[in-house]
Amino acid sequence: DTGVSQDPRHKITKRGQNVTFRCDPISEHNRLYWYRQTLGQGPEFLTYFQNEAQLEKSRLLSDRFSAERPKGSFSTLEIQRTEQGDSAMYLCASTGDRGAYEQYFGPGTRLTVT
Amino acid sequence: QKEVEQNSGPLSVPEGAIASLNCTYSDRGSQSFFWYRQYSGKSPELIMSIYSNGDKEDGRFTAQLNKASQYVSLLIRDSQPSDSATYLCAVIPASKIIFGSGTRLSIRP
Image (cartoon, rainbow over all chains, first blue to last red; front, side):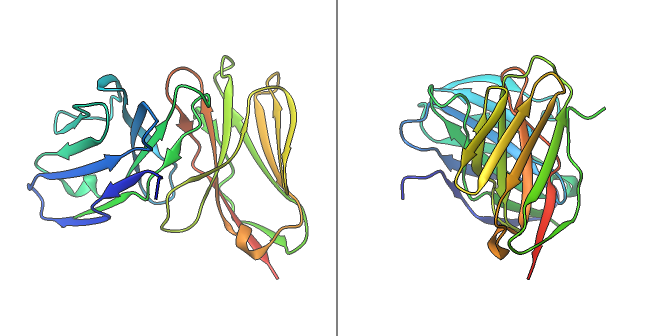
């Protein structure tokens, strides 16, 4: 399978715990995006990388959120001290230099904070 | 005003008819426009992109763009039950993509 993959697909955690999600983009894609989606809403932009450089972060991304893409391949998104409001689907998407921002999404990680 | 606006629906269309989905956007400088389909519990799937004024056809799908009116639409011909999903309009005004909240489409037999 050469699409975008995400791991884990589901995560249930208790409030206050830290969680980390992983995204593996399409191999030739150098841009990688993280989004959060809640029920009835479209995906909300969180951050994006071009290769290993994090070029933009949303104001929605509090200090509890951090993302990395150390070698310009896979990326991780960590949420520290989770809150119930963090419960959402976390989506990763990738795109190449060509294709004018046509983004291809992974299956998502559904986070439930209890 | 939201950056990308869509009617949330549900839009109910009989099987075999044309479904028409609409989207307006606020940033006049936007250059890239997309339609994504999202089935319940799944991630968005890109179905159309359009960059120039006018129509772009791909199979049963036609995207229409009118930059002067800041309006994008998606037509689905010969609607099938498998077209029942939420359709997300997305726009790139600068470096990142902005999604609308989506229109829920239901194709009734």
